[in-house]
Amino acid sequence: MNDFAYAASESNGLEFETDVLVVGGGLAGAWAALGAARAGADVVLVDKGYCGTSGVTATAGPGHWWVAPEARDETVRKRFAAGAGLGDPQWMHRILDTTWRHLRSLAPYYTFPVDARGQTLFRALRGPEYMRALRSMVESAGVRILDHCPVLELLRHTDGSIAGAQGLQRQRQQPWRARAGAIVLATGGCAFRSKLLGADNNTGDGYLMAAEAGAELSGMEFSNYYTVAPKFSSMTRSMSYVFARYFDASGRELPIAPGPNQTVTLAAALLDGPVFCTLDLTPEDLRTALPTISPNVMLPFTRRGIDPFKDRFEVTLRGEGTVRGIGGLRITGAACETSVANLFAAGDTATRELVAGAISGGGNINSAWALSSGLWAGRGAAERARSQGRRSTEAAHSIGQAGLRPLRHAATIDTAAVIATVQRPMLDYDQNIFRNGQALAQSITQLDSTWRTFSDHAQGGAGSWVRTRETAAMLATARWCASSALARTESRGMHQRTDMPRTDPAWAQRITVGGLSKVWQRREASKQPEMAAA
Image (cartoon, rainbow, N blue to C red; front, top):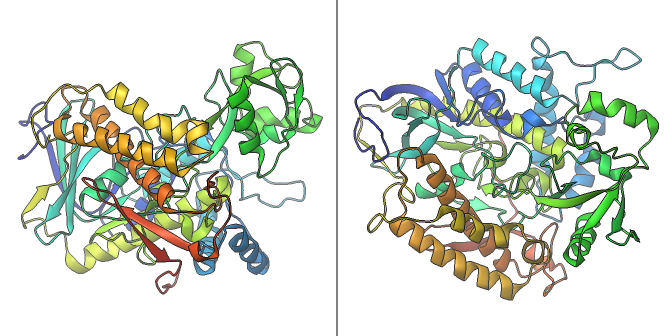
């Protein structure tokens, strides 16, 4: 095995080839593997963790955008209007149709609940059981799963198309290398280590690897969605906070009402001092049902002897970055192709502007997008592999750089300090919720300087290759987010600038961004390629 700068030992590395390589074993990755396998491809799925428990879905109670055919026109009309001009109705209809037809295929592996009238409830699922069922489906489809095998970089043909990937077998600390006819990136979004539940592994890995191959991103300015949570916990399941009342440290009740302005109002209060909450407005029937609906929600309170329906507890806001933000790799066609040949994207790795517009898709649209984009990308990758073959005898070279192969000489880099530099503009309320041009420009200058140092000198070592590479990905993602936010000289959707509070009709356009040594942006009209059949 050649060119493994990060291999602990090259003598026992794993080498294989396949039609389709799916990177990521969360919700989108599992559906992508199914899409490719159902299209007749030989499929291998590699996961940084364990497929079935990885990603944010496994800790959640994900709903889906589940709309009957007769109600879809009105649903799409409302969603398009809410998305501030950046969504696409054709894609919205596709996702509704695909979710409606395919979610029920889970039934042999998952027990859907039934209502009092005997009707099966397909819309809402319990994350742990959902992911366990998907793993069973993937295995039954003949997909080979390699757990605890993070991808560190992509391989590229001399013509610029993607040839495969390589990474590390974490439990053996030995390398693996795969040649593939096509790759689906389903590595999730980037939450910048905000303590968002289930998102510690969501560090933007797919963005970085794709950008190293020349891929473009879109919607990265819409990366400032936040979720309320107890300050002492990472429990970011927030449904119950619809019934919350908030108080300052003196016990004065604060005028923070549920709705679209809650995050901004709560953030402003948190900047003034500690904020406390009680869920005492929660209806009795919901209090009784909550442990069944979301069993993990009550655990942090129980462990601390807190009754959230009576007691007051301190709260915070956890940033979700591009997890419930909407930015990601730019999609160029109906099969979720990226701008790089043989490379596809699904779930939070891909932009969700197409279906969410300029506001978060929340849980239901994001889950439906993960399912649908996974199936489309998997099928598209299978078709690409079938049409051109694996090309495994052709030359291919590795293209990973930051954190793997320093541009200058290797030197010790304080990765904790780098992450802190990233988190300040990406998570702090005064920087990321209340944006302004001067602060964004200052953040970009600091992030660019940090990137140059990291790219020039950072190199992982035994036991740190993955973490070093994750740091590079978070740093790169922050640069794209900040650059896009500065470029959008208006306020639209979740992107709000205190120095430019108005929405400019001329900015009903998407911003494409890319580049590593130098970040670039360009404005794109919100027009999508002609749709193929779903």
